[in-house]
Length: 616
Image 1: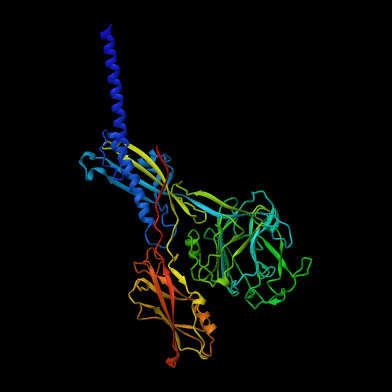
Image 2 (image 1 turned 30 degrees about the vertical axis):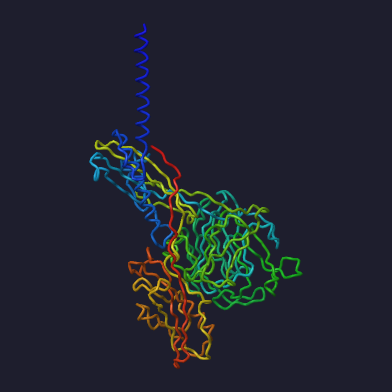
């Protein structure tokens, strides 16, 4: 009996020891350092799992390396590649099993653990990196408010006296989301500027006639352009990018509307002289005074002078004392990335940049509203090349009174599409944080697979100069007036060899012009620092202000480290560029030279933050 008890005790003890050793072994097997392979895995499964973990690490290293280059573009990691018909075992193990779908990804990486360690012979990994999601910031307008001058009880944003609104050509673009339902009847303003009816953009559906269905309705120079209601179908309850382009003049087809980079309407605008609110505009031009409001998310019906009590449209007096009158139905939905340009941008420019966060230094940019502030009663104008007194910050109406709210949401990228179909990524540029998914599979010598998924996040950062072009601000041109005109203006670079002022031949260039100044001619293009850009002024005396205004059309252009000026650059050399601007006179004693500094800052370096980690 005692011997049986002893045998039983020994058996229990042995089982306990084996269990303890198993736990210790398991703990050892699941431990790894940053090198991952410093601890030997004791089973085939553990070696394959190690390979999968190594794949995740390789994916993270690739994301970090890509994000930390000195490059211009914001959206540098995109899902530009695809596995057709889900034909990949690793992706199948990660849940992509529909053979009618293509799987989108940014980068595929493969590795072999046995290349430098014989005990891992035949153990490999395969990795797919995907741009997974972005944070999107915007402003939401509630579509409510009371007609009149009460701005507290209206849901919109406004600049009462907008400075330098482009009056001979423009591009106005933004991301918007119309939150009306398909069956709703409505007539709402997206934005309006100027005297009443100078520039109006509405979205409406009245259920019958011209606007029986959802329609864009632009008005320019008092004329409703879309009398046929055929400017494309405004998407509801989804983000869409919209651009209104006016080429100026009165030629046929000088107004265009693009939706998500696609041309949806071409129209004829012939702006004639019109007297309204006490001002008469020139033929083929909008008013030029800095006294008219820009309202985003709402419309206006003239101005109210001090003492007026009824909604009329009187002549404006002192702009600081006047008030505009709200009218119509405000916008119901979100607005983000509102950009106003004094040039007519091409379809290619619009389509290639509507999902890129610009820097505010781009030539031709007048005002730029990200609508990403997240709190407060103001939306900043992020144009960086304009003088401080020419910035057009917006005031937000209706926060806490009419349902105006700042919005932040996560927008996921399409990762699985029908075979052969181009994925549509119709969301504004990401805000602050971007998310990346890493799908890894360790593979054994007999084809065994261990899938592992990790989602990481990283700050969204960019270089200092968007697409490589930096405008020269008129306030940076400080030429004085000697009483007569120069023979020519020359632009090249200082190069003293210091880190504070560098010139890189082939990478740095100076370009003319966003639009050629009236009467000026370009007699020589910049090809290198010994061959400056030369402009010749028109005949006759020019004031210093006229010269400075004309030369503000010049801009710095980076041609990338690869010296390719014909395309937007990808990478650049950080540092300070100091532009040398000279006026040359017949009497050389009157020659003038000024320096204009442009800083191409290095990108802030980022780190990855793990968001999730799971076995499939």
